[in-house]
Length: 319
Image 1 (cartoon, rainbow, N blue to C red):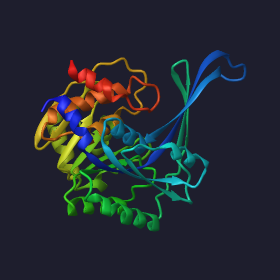
Image 2: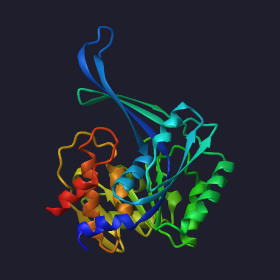
Image 3: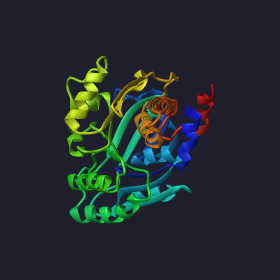
């Protein structure tokens, strides 16, 4: 199967995605002078753009690529939650549960003349309460048999508790649906060990080294074998950004080259890669990973966290 056939097959896939959702607010300005009272520029705002980050960015990428999606997350009982009223798509089945004891996660990013000057996060990293955890499992379970696989995107903002993770792994095995996991370590230690028994773990280089400090991209086979053993997962993929990717899938080691682009903003590239991988075909591993590299690279050519355009991916794979 060639890359174009794999991309076409995306339209037949249905994913269940659960993870921390984030509102990304981008403020774009241009500098006009140096501030008199601080070592910072004074700037005039050009525009403000709101997009969906975290698991909802993975969701928008899956939908742009043509997949169908059942999406679960938790939002706060606040004004920022209203941003999600516009989060809709014909192939999206959205389940955003409200937790009245937390606030919706918002990340405000301030760009001046193409440079990210400042980021301010409004986050609540406390674990969801046991009653909400139980409710999520009750709502999710009937959907498991309807989807091709489960994806857990864990930004470690409190949604994916140990109890919820244990239940996802249990349901994955019970219904024989693969569980793909992408867990971030940007503000908390690695929790990858909690996902022992998952079908596939996706990591970036920093996360791989958090799991195994001896991880070495120059020795990918032994490094991936170590991660597989430490985490008790069947498969592992390490996203290397502008260096491509390395993977251990179906007991086969694969290294793929990056797709070269003019990068402007790397935010969201890993989420784009995850989305394409979730829709891919592990019977055609190399081609799938090449598609993931291209899609992740295209994400870096856009300021903010909107997904690339599927047609751009198709055009590249036609060449």
